[in-house]
Image (tube, rainbow, N blue to C red; front, side, top):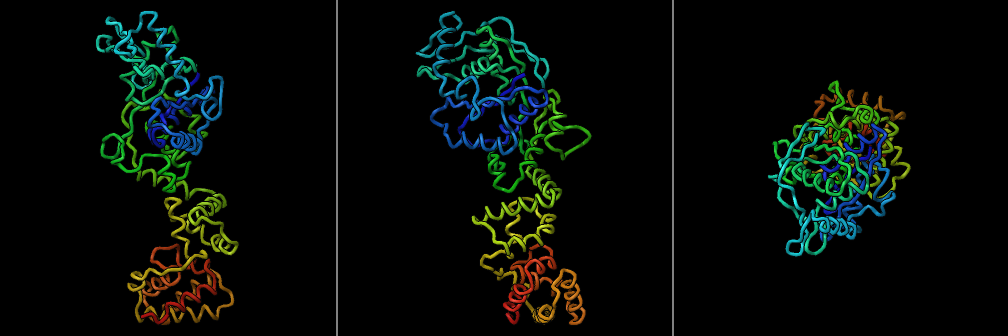
Length: 436
């Protein structure tokens, strides 16, 4: 069993292409088959190394590896169509000499028989039949000697020994042409599987009007690779038992291309974000801390100091329960880092009052006298002071939150103060006291 994915490097890796690659990879893994990645770069004007590298990097990020093809090698050279133009011309000339094709204004056009039909069984759609009377003669080699998609893709599938071709349903109408070419070249006919296209929540084909559509864009949004892998698996397939969260091993164990749903799959970013948050919350604490530190260092473009790491270790368990993506991390904890501390002036004005000033003075004095600056003692002091001064909880706590973190939106208040430490907390309270 041998499957393939053949992306064109004319843009960044699209979510739909990533899903198609994933399904091919899963089926190959589930059946101890071979998975191949080739680059269909016959469009030399639009193809680029940047896009090729983006495709490779994001496949690898998703956990997709391959046995043969671009970047890993194999018995067929570089696995780039742009380097195989001589091979495609050779096949076109062969068909021309055998009377199975003819010249047309400098191009070579395949001669389609007008009687009969092309029949095959599709893994998703079942029995398919196309009347040859509906298939026009088609160009296989352009006048500039460049191959069309029909010729290049088919010749590659034959030469590379592909036994199952699983691709998007937008190619379905081209499949009769490819089978005709395979028959004309006396090659074995592979199995076919045409996967449903991805649609947006509005029921229309997924496109830029729905927002980001590249894998890289979602990486940049702070999506975990495990969450993206999991979610892509659910776009047209399910492991059963209403299971929505699962790992690579379970997906491989359960996956079958023949169980792919024929109806279009809906790409819902809200559900992806929900799933991503679920993965973050269920990640091992130590692993999350490593991931979080890496993300924060990436955001700051520098390594963290030991004191910063110590503060973060105290707050990250609380943050882990609150964030939905990795991009939420740094804004939540930046008040603990050795970066310029800025208080949101609008938010400070909204919480600053005579009562809040009295409260801030009260807790600052008690914090100053506190010898054991523990989480428990901080909470006791702050709650007792509310009662002693007859200050409402919202007034006291909101003012303290903004004074300590710079904003109303932050990790839990007591944990924030504890993580910041006694001296820094006293200093920040002092900065805001009497700022009426």
